[in-house]
Image 1 (cartoon, one colour):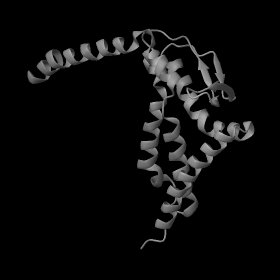
Image 2 (cartoon, helix red, strand yellow):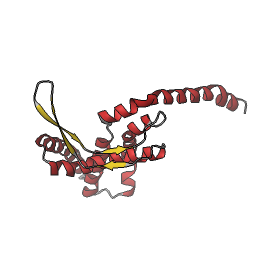
Image 3 (cartoon, helix red, strand yellow):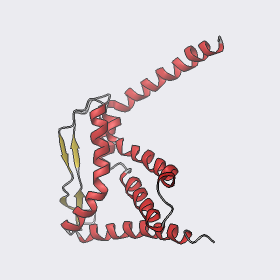
Length: 184
């Protein structure tokens, strides 16, 4: 058995422990710990929003990764705390709402590229294996859109715009491009 397999197992354990540790800190509500984990967890997520807003004409003008505590009472009357980890303000329109809202999903592409090519550029050593799992954890955990991200994506009838755009592309492919390539 390859001795490095133990480090792959340790990497998986690291990911599970980070996830559990983060949830424990969030439940305790300590602002410094939330900020440290929020920095690791929020920065790539908000940068994805910022980049897509910039590319789609959203002109981002506000960027925050400072966590804010939001107290609320749940349906059972228990006092709870929600955390707002960060935000990007942008001008959301019908053509960029879905792209801006779902921008963190692009981090899954980064996770896939990391998974595919990481060991082509990094040594197959114990520290590199643990770093590999840490990078995958950060990218995958940040790729999950928040409730607010879904609200932004569903606003401005942006889905209808993209559906029409895909429909036009499909018709163009079926009736124009296929016909053109068949005649060649």
